[in-house]
Image 1 (tube, one colour):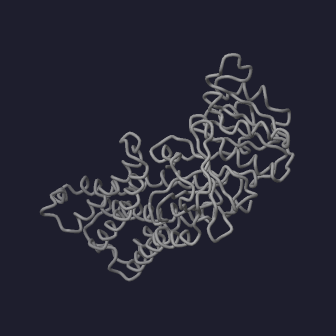
Image 2 (cartoon, helix red, strand yellow):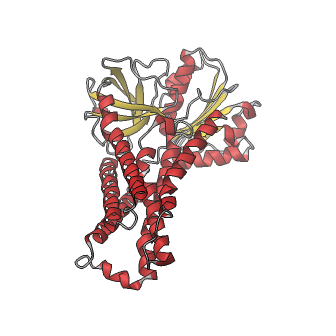
Image 3 (cartoon, rainbow, N blue to C red):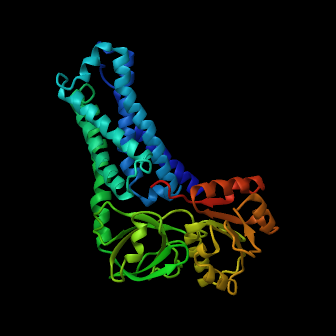
Length: 438
């Protein structure tokens, strides 16, 4: 209940600060001769601008904001709200042009006032952000390049929008309205300064060194780190962090990865990375001694957040990584609560950590069900995908009392959740975490 109220508090704060400009618009005299539709369009523009400006805080990884929901939920909310806010901003000029056709002359940048041109530039900048975010993969854009474009264009877009508002001046000439926008812009600048200046400075004081690079099954690599001049990072089993390798913490290029090591050993955190893209395909070439910076921990996907009589872990591919952190932590704690692991892999050779998982059966109360898509000849275990039938055959009679943890590719997570729901399992006990927000 406390966590729910805390989450509701932040939702209320975001709603309040986002709609504040609309209430301030009602104060004082309205400029004459503008009509309902003109004022309505201005209200939409202000609302959209306010919603986008506060995104600097939503994406700033403030743990007090992300802890009630999980950072993946916050980032998905950021994506949805940004689309809605962009629609509001886009409707601002569209409604003006439709309701007052004479304003179509402003489409000519050579004869338009400078503040009109600045407004169109800000709209173009927001459009670039939206298009590159929605269609990054279709455009063949590397994550690193998209991250740079997204970060800097966002600042430019918000700055241009603010200049446009000041240039129009209809709603900033009165002291209260002027101070509202000064407050909001100052808050956005402070949020940006924290993200791009203060946080990197703090990370600069807590560097890590790559201690070891280990080749794993399934085209994966484990990087183990040694903290330099500090005690390491305390994290919950299943959480993740953003990793920066061979660069300054001020670099925009960073990538999220789950911890695969035990939470009982913060002095030697480790992550396991599968070769999937441009950055990850180079992990095998990282040398011991490489400088690294780790921003974390983040995420609510952890057995330490919910008490349960037992656990069911369902992993697909590299989704075994946070599950491995949970198993290793339970092993170090001598935790004998029952765990059933469903592990889906394309081939038997792709089953990362399979030898260690088998060895853990001697010290954990662990049942492992491998589900192999392309099973080898003579395979007697489960084949294909993790379906409701596979789950039903292998879940214990206490299945309704356990907590469930699902991690893997998004299509796999969606299918597994449908399967669990089909079996009548309580969905409030199903935990998952997705990285498709990047």
